[in-house]
Length: 134
Image 1 (tube, rainbow, N blue to C red):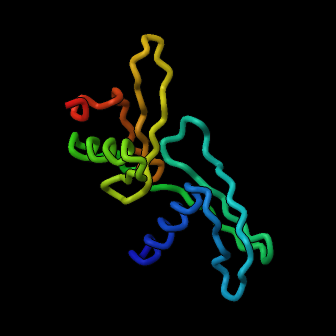
Image 2 (cartoon, rainbow, N blue to C red; image 1 turned 45 degrees about the vertical axis):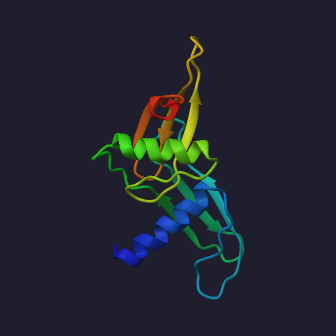
Image 3 (cartoon, rainbow, N blue to C red; image 1 turned 135 degrees about the vertical axis):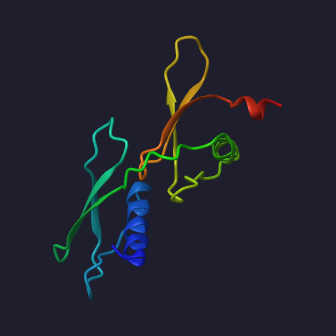
């Protein structure tokens, strides 16, 4: 896949991930595209099925799992700070928005799973991070 095609696919993936409207990629068709998340709950990488309601154009989008190198502490701190400031944190490797998933914890210590559904990187972190308590 050429870099421009990868960028286009990644852009569509981000739109699908954020539940944004996607228009048909077929030439001359402005039809709306139905996006269906085909992923299972435990999948590290999401898969979306896109289908144009007007012309029948169809494609499937899947992230590209790449777990190495893992996020370093600086990247995690930056993502946590952006999350605390109510901004959209992004994965430093592929610029995909990351999600913070609250995890149940019986001892009342907050824990979050930080996940990028494009590259599959995930980490469980205490909340708030020790660096932001200073």
